Amino acid sequence: MEAARRVPEERQRRHPRVQLQPQHSDGPEHAVRGHAGSRRHRARSLRCTVPAQQRGHRGDVPDVHDGHAPHGPDGDDRRRPNPRYVDGTEARHELRREAGQPVKIGLDLDGCLYNFEDSLREFLRSEDYPEGLMTEPQRWSFHDDWGLSYEEFRDACNEGVDEGYVFSCGEPYEGVQEGVRRIKEMGHSIHIITARAYGSPGMAQLNTARWLAAYGIEYDTLTFSHDKTVVQTDVMLEDNIGNYEALEAAGTIAVLMDRPWNRGTPEDYRRTRVLSMDHFVELIEEMHD
Image (cartoon, rainbow, N blue to C red; front, side):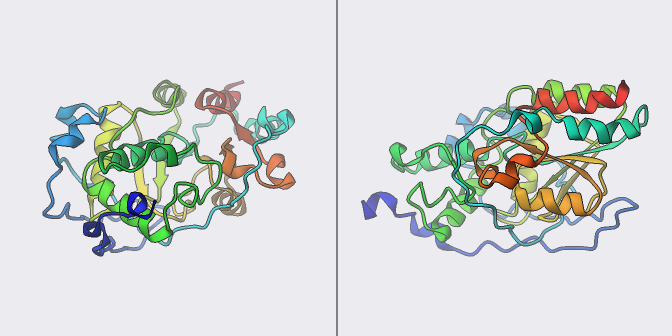
């Protein structure tokens, strides 16, 4: 068992972090240009579903902001949330105050638009990690359920990013591309805000930009930060309870993408949440009523 769980020693090397520059909420973000490092993606990364022509083009590394990883809830409650809150009744009441006005829509990536754990699975499969250990996550710290220590999990994520699996493999969740298109057609702006600090400097940003381009997901700004309030948004879709609370405190209408890891306490069931991207777009469409 220990041999099956062991992460290759080459992953133990340190991955320097991207340097942070100040963020101005009332103007363009300050760009931090990272370097992809000397490692080249191995040929096996071509199994990723992102078109090869997108993976082969380096492109520009988008604006980068770094921070410290948040600690998510460990709730493991698998009950379905109260439909009263799932249907977004409370959010619709607030959104109507902005009727007819373009608004800034914030979108988180992992757990909302992108299936992070599936991309990590693809990398671990390439390392012959036991398939049976990689169950569907039911809590934020799912690495424990996969038989990985935090250090092993972190190193696997770092290596997976550098090898072109993590943040590169996999399709968007159902309805994401169409949902983003519909939001843009309403005249609203899209602001993607994601943490994504794994890998050699610049690699997470590069993988992200390639993936978004490959699937035609349009956005106005792309910001990398653990603090989701660094960009002032009117409405934001999140899957992390801590980020949800911080957004609400900053005056943003926060909406949870319903996931097992954000359904741990009775209070969690009283938060505005949606079951899909289509459902989130329905909330935004209320602004045009």
